[in-house]
Length: 372
Image (cartoon, rainbow, N blue to C red; front, side):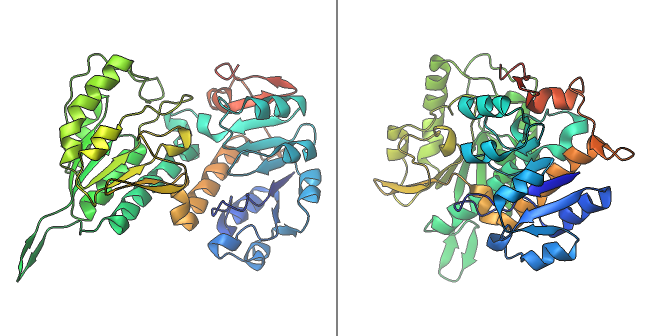
């Protein structure tokens, strides 16, 4: 069995796999092929892959033709799908709720596709949870980018000329990314506050040394995967009113709120931005799914009345080598879990709770119930 790792699109800094993980696949008994230049953006040469026993493929089309499994970080292009063999297993982030055309094309090509976003959040699948591993690094990168952009220091400093007060950071949304943002801002010495629609996360916020902002918005729920459920318009307005004062006192706001499979909720309005002090910074981590902040734009820095709104769609790419390392490990853990060592094939049992959750297409059909 052969696994192929093609290069990502030019705007992607991360690599799907690093040599140390490629070696694990080879030790498992799988032939590894990587497209030439796969690791260039993270300063990993073709030679380092070759030293592990991987082969270097100069032509992507040839790599697709000989592969039983194809792995990428980002969704395939229509051209990629056309080159996949019938029965190939394709694994990447697929955004299946929004990319209906891609899902249909994968089904028509009789490709068995796995969406890394849909790996169930259960104990057995934690080692495969690429969404969490990338969000974790994204939360860290968001704070580092904010600290670089903000025109003041994060920690309190005692100087001969007087005391410099710490920066005030407000984190909206306390999932994996939000918790890492809180932890990173605290390590840099900021005074941190956080809000989430799920009151159950208050204890986690406090355990990191931050203050949990309480806003009464009525009954809220979360999915069985631990994601926040979408709020009503009335609840969003109540949330915005409660947050406005905190925003006006904050030097940095990090927004992470996303609703799985739907556009991100608009939380920070124009008047909330205008209430902030000139020189303040907002990082909208949900910009790629519509954005939490009014006025944020994908991959742009927007300046509005002295406030910088940062909309970086690929924050994990800011720490690309680590992001590549953990994503490759997530892929390896996924494949190893279902690897039949004796017959050297993947045991593709759709009754398994993990595969049932994340397999999108198989044998010419869309098999995932939520995507259907």
